[in-house]
Amino acid sequence: MKRALIILALVAAAGASGCTQNPQTNADLSCAGGVLGGAAVGGLLGNQIGGGSGKAIATAVGAGGGAAIGTRNPACR
Image (cartoon, rainbow, N blue to C red):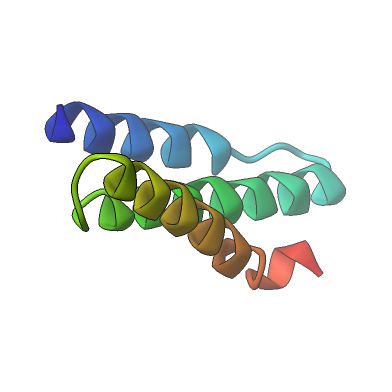
């Protein structure tokens, strides 16, 4: 299960980091990649903590925190 989540996170981050000829679209994609990648990594790290409902809460908090950190990407400003 963990391998599947890691692979999914890598595929999502790679897909969101594509480029176009439009500079604004490139910035939007870069921002989305940072947010999605941050959420994926944060969720994976949060999932390593606790058990039962505590594990679900830690995963959600990790994903939210990772997404928030992902917005610190300069393309998101």
